[in-house]
Length: 114
Length: 113
Figure 1 (cartoon, rainbow over the protein chains, first blue to last red):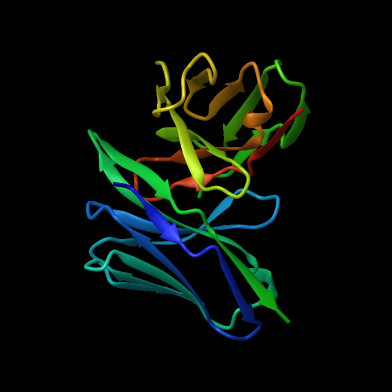
Figure 2 (figure 1 turned 30 degrees about the vertical axis):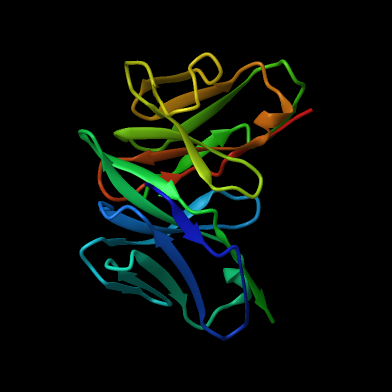
């Protein structure tokens, strides 16, 4: 199946690290993604990881992938109030002759308290 | 990354009417997609817009309700036909050039009364 699960809410204090978790079910995923959606905006691609990798770091963002457990996480270091948003996990699954389509989780609402 | 614009950004419509949403990209892209995001829900793929041929619809979505055009590699439209309050959603255009990245437009926020 193509179920992608995320916890719905996370609250952290400014300056702390945030860890947003995601689980998926389809082992044929080629890429896994994190998107950010701020209020009233579209989705911003934050980062993505190839399914054969287990970690990717990009400035304050660290993505960890445990392919055996089908678990993806996004760690935001030194979380700021501007990081408050909804974070979507997505997996790309190959389909037919195309590179595949994305399946999204329901999103995690991150609230950062000053 | 591609810069994507959508028109209108938001609208309030009466039930039974239709609304056409436009998506414009600043560069030629291979793939264009239309998604729906219902309140508090995840994103659902409506269809893939194919240039020069009929769109490919996902299960649960039909051409009569959501006609799509894609006349060239930078532009697509989605029409929401015979609207009901259940069609109130955010409609998002998304593009990819066949690689690993896929980008989204700012969305069109639709409220049907």
